[in-house]
View (cartoon, rainbow, N blue to C red):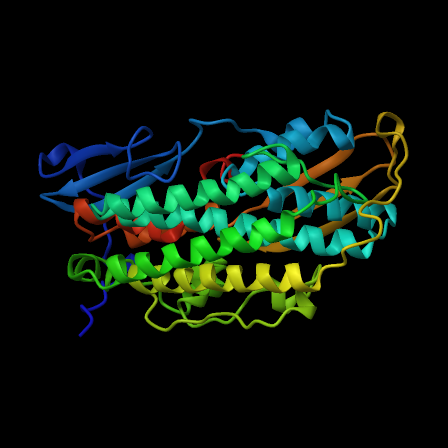
Length: 387
């Protein structure tokens, strides 16, 4: 039997606590804290061990990306966009490159379509492996974190072989991708997927059948379905609430229309359900990677020729390109004025909604010990908030 869902406190029942009354304790969780998803901080107001108010504070990490991009040549921005979401930079590369291609009228080769899809799904798996370790660790289960970070390193080994970099890749560029796959790479991808899949079986057994994890996660951070459109909730947080939205299916970009999969949808919409759903999406990512390896063209060009990046000017125009990252809709709005630099770039990441608007409402009424587990269940990256 599931624990009763946490009651969402309506705005009419919430009052600003009188901090001079001596009744409340003001405490900070973060920015240096294992229960914070990155360099950010929560200002918590507690009555006893129950949180009654919360403010999200950011700005402890690199920021101001959008303005910096206006002062750099188009190609110079690729090392910059990766920093907006460090654990999964390839989605930034794809959205930015695809926006420039749309403005410049560039069509990428078929092989590049598949290599981009492979890169994004490998990154999805690596990001989820980092997340599940954090979710387990937030509830005191450090063994899972050690397993999952090891598996993530195996996936990063593949990225290092493919791109030369483990964290920041700059592999997806306008016109296609930066290089072809090394000899024997696909074989090593399949071998790594087999190892990771076996580890996921162990994680499911040890974590999701653990009575303490279930007791603490079930009912925690319940998101009503009517919040999804109201707050702009996307990704697993929305799908766990029963909303079957996935841009890989809805928009059909890259090679996704030719892959066999369906969005995974939940019903309970609490921290436990969100964790189960993400575990399912990790298995799904492994299956998609296997499909890509089987179907991707093994010959042909992987990049279209481009003008000299130092003199490349993109025709005036504007566009918005989005993709389904591990946390939901990720999009780049790019405006060109015909010069050698972007006129305006605006990034739409899921973290602002999930870490500020939603988190500040869900945390009220939660025990202090469960704040970390709740926050990790929303899966956010701070640089997206103050970008």
